[in-house]
Length: 146
Image (cartoon, helix red, strand yellow):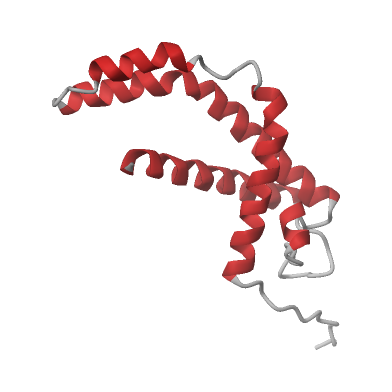
């Protein structure tokens, strides 16, 4: 069995990963601002709908109201999601396995089979999509439980 030169690495802590993810989400949000400037819905047209329908006791009516209120935000969510995915993919490619958040936290993504090589682009894309879905899922849960 030939001797392989193995690079020893220490996995990042969950705390460091969470901070890096939050920093990256903040960076992606800042990048989204120019794209969303003219896309934000007019809240003055939504507020009367909330006020008029907020006294409903029927679950179906409340679900319909939430759908009516959220509908203008779907375009914003799609743009934000796409920009976030592009941010994660491009930054990991440009910074060779790191994003701005990961660089600040001094961690990086490595290929476990060959830590000295860059992570494959397809895996980076899949990871970025999952991060975006996770972020939107957490936002959706907090909106529902409020």
